Image 1 (cartoon, rainbow, N blue to C red):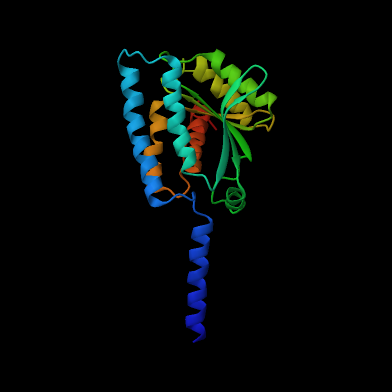
Image 2: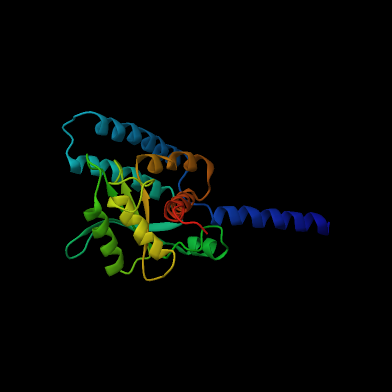
Length: 232
């Protein structure tokens, strides 16, 4: 009798744990609608970057922001966010704040411990690759506002080649992150191009905490970009 009681209590705990720590409070139907829209947006974003269309840079940027907005919605029990936040001379695409559930999961290392309570995401969907000006601006914003983590999404990439040296856009991000991995005074910038952004699709299917797994993957790739040029 006692054994059956304890087994039932254990199962009840597991059920309540899974319910409390699930990543969103959406119904299955609501989740499917958002995931289907994500899949359609991927096709739309790619097609508008391959051919000449009447889409302006703003239109293309809005599509990219909607894509990431839906990813955030699928994690609405873990995070809250503000969109298009105006500062004196800038607009921040997404300011993301961890909710209590995410902070508990972080304390248990179920999501990475380095994820801060607040971080920024910038989405850029320009026709050209982006140079150091955009990266410097984002880095300055992180520093001024005292954020330790920023996700910089440049759909068509940034200048320079990550395999070759420390110059142009890639080089600047590597320099910033080299300092970030050694001191708390510099924020970490995780960079995502088209390939890294759309890797979210696989994680959405496989992971309970997909947003944080994606960020962790970006951080590991960032770390590899920085330290592969060094011999220890």
